[in-house]
Length: 198
Image (cartoon, rainbow, N blue to C red; front, side, top):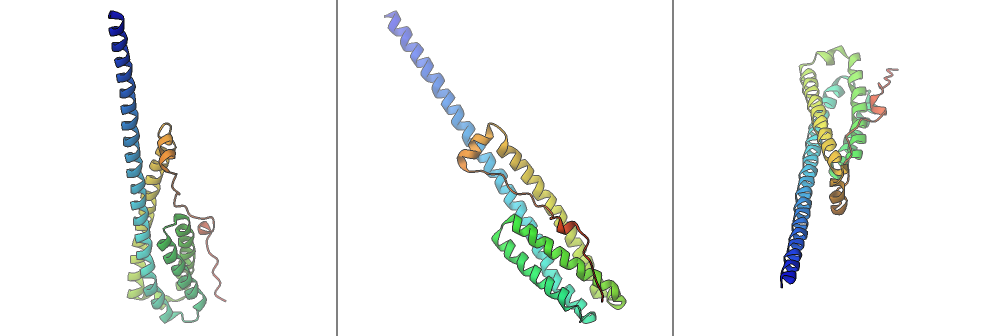
């Protein structure tokens, strides 16, 4: 009898330990999955902030272009480039693809820098209060874009590190959490545009 009783107690103890381990693993899995979901949503929210700020800048550009057009009517090629770049950026923001947004934004940056370089040839334009106010507002928006990009990339770094760190990577793989893309400037965006006034 003592033998059967001790075997029963041992089995119950083993089953209790196994059950406790299973409960701990399931609890850890749920907690980890919830943590990953929160980090992924943080990345999405920051991406939305970047997109909103880029859209704000995109909305300012037509006013700037119209002001410049009043002084520099023969610069139609630059105006067309800006319109095309704005359209691409709007489509990229709509798609939500961060790589496409980054590339489209770099194209718009390049076209915008050419527009601002052109204004150097028009002293009356540079003296215009409307142009100065728009340029100041655009500069403020550029600062907001840089801050939004920085916050986005910080969230991506935290998320990516967590997703790739063992043992969290196991849960990330099971539930389909994959690393997010950083918002990076292309090599073309880092080059100074060539402006020709001939």
